[in-house]
Picture 1 (cartoon, rainbow over the protein chains, first blue to last red):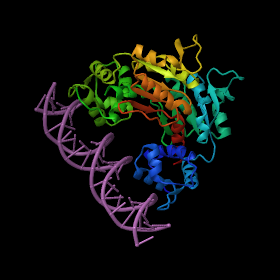
Picture 2 (cartoon, each protein chain N blue to C red):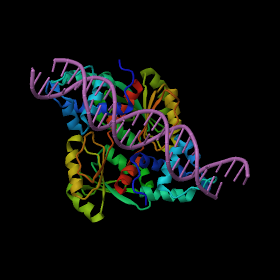
Picture 3 (cartoon, chains in turn green, cyan, blue, yellow):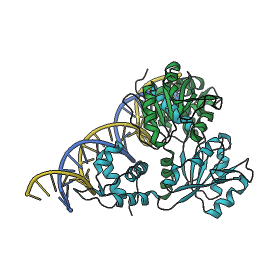
Picture 4 (cartoon, rainbow over the protein chains, first blue to last red):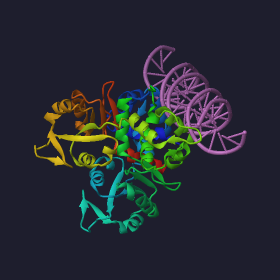
Length: 202
Length: 202
DNA sequence: TAGATTGTTAATCGATTAACAATC
DNA sequence: TAGATTGTTAATCGATTAACAATC
């Protein structure tokens, strides 16, 4: 196995995979992929050379093999469970979001301060916070999604990590502190919109 | 005015502003900002030197003046209207999201294929698609948010641009084509989660 | 063989960091 | 003045692109 795929490359792999899902021909060239996604040919080739074994000169890559390699690199081939904390509007929207399963990801339960035992969203249970730790341990959950208000986010994050979570996806507009070895991705929506706004201005 | 603030710098400005909102002392040093946000001191100084006039050696920056400069650079000082297309779960979650107004952004209406005239979300009207163009022109809306399913996204995007939209925030898992001069920001949630997942693996 | 396409090595570009001079 | 802190110039780093050799 190759040891290090750069973060930048990693970020493009899902796009390659998504594009390839709609390719029916047996072979595909880096040029075709690049054109479809608006990327440089060489960049695509370099990325693909990192995840996939070999493409053949003249013919390109075997579509099916390339798909398989991308799935393996992305960990899509096994379904990974995730939990979500904060079943408010944004949280329930994410629970309802169909796209995750495509990447082998599945939100199997949500947790909320205000959860009565019978609550369900999109067919998924919503439990009280007290059950978070035990649930994550039983189901060996390693991914946690935070959709609580800013003032509760760090506390929730700490509880997730105490429950064995190794990757945190944070939707609260707060910089979270996580120990080394825990992956953190911030999705500050207000910041993204502000960013778009300033792109427009500048 | 300085001509070009890099995209990377621009992306950090909202974080600076957010942090400064909670600073009460009259002056603030680049070192303090850097520590709070986990960035390099010099990086902060370089960013701030681009947006703000001058900090004073020994004392640092005048907090209030720095806030004002950041707001100006981000265009926060005037409230900017935005429209949202696709009032499903994710769309309504965004309409309900409180953080946007903080950055001077306001979703003033939503549009949806299935809109009866009386529908409202978070006190904001939901109109049928037919009224999109006229509404944007009357209210001089320049920012559009797309939260429709993948298969409708490009069509909605085209309609937004035909309505005078200059910046598109796309939540559908599709690469949109926009003409030059239109800012596009993609927020592919499935891709972000996949990215987190693969960070964890690698 | 000739042509197409891959994979790699070197060059470029942009962003970050280090070093340091300027100044309150 | 001495010390702290800014702002800038040069060095580093990482990612992308260009050039080109390898090969089916």
